[in-house]
Amino acid sequence: MKIRRRIIPNLVFLLAAVTVHAAETTTLKTQPGSKIRIDGTANILHTHWAVQSSLIAGSIEVGPVFPTEPGKTVTPGKVDAKGECSVPVRSLKSIEDDGKPYSDAMDDVMYRKLKAQANPKIIYRLMELTLKESAKDKDSPYVFDSKGEVAVAGVTNPVAFPVNVLPVTGNKIRISGNTALKMTDFKIQPPAPTIALGAIKTGDEVKISFEWILTPNTAAAAK
Image 1: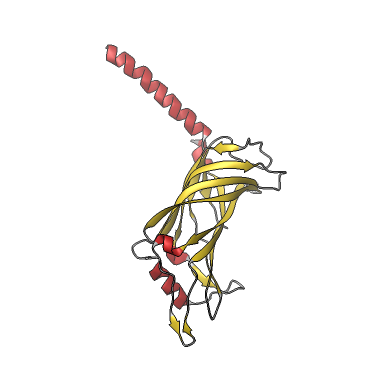
Image 2 (image 1 turned 90 degrees about the vertical axis):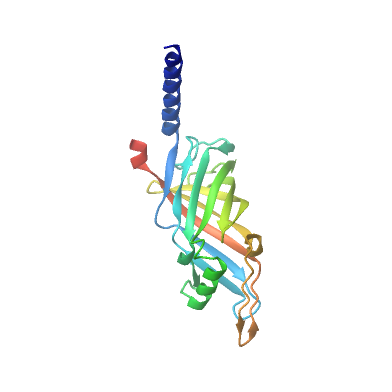
């Protein structure tokens, strides 16, 4: 009986803590309109190349101080935020400068280099978010420093880069940012296909830029 008397209050406290935590967190889920782009360089033919995808899946769990609406007062410092998103490798397509499709052959080379069959997704995990600059007005973004990790072609590396968080109309939140990565850090040898003009050598460094559109999961919040 004494053991039961100790266990029951502890269980009640635990359930209460879980309930409070659930009430204080909001799940943000991906919406249409998201996109990611990778830009790189080459020595001949097209000295600049780009691939793009509009498929970003995933969600973020944020605490009560995260700016989910324009003009919300947020004190600089760490905020509660954890999440994960992914991009199907085969959704990445090479594009011309005007955004039109470029080359299926280039896409096939990219898929092989990214080991798409064994690792069909590029995965990013957000682990830490720190507010550096609050929004100047309702039309300006909140500027955060982010820390996380990215998995590409079966290799996972830590990454850190600034992101802008901008609540927009339609109860949506636009998270955007960019960073530079090196292919060789993920054990990817930069493509160097041979053509009539000679061997194309692509640069090791690529620039990743993205816009991730999310909205609060109202169904989850109602439960």
